[in-house]
Image 1 (cartoon, rainbow, N blue to C red):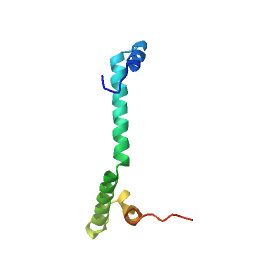
Image 2: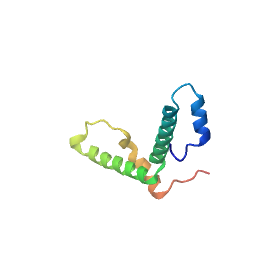
Image 3: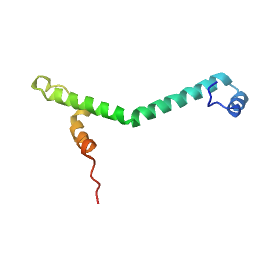
Image 4: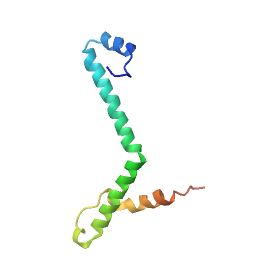
Length: 92
């Protein structure tokens, strides 16, 4: 049982018809995955690494040898990089 699981959570899980341990394990797993996904989406370092990778792919696909490859998110990476580097202007 993790530190975040309280006595009340255990009592509630025991009151359910299915396996209490399975329920608590599923809840803990869901909480962990939600936290992990939230951090990976909102972590500035992850965002910069993703943008840098897309810019690298944009440069690679600009080479005449790879011009027939389809464009993905890297197609507009340069447009997203500029405001990220210099700061976005506020309208109004």
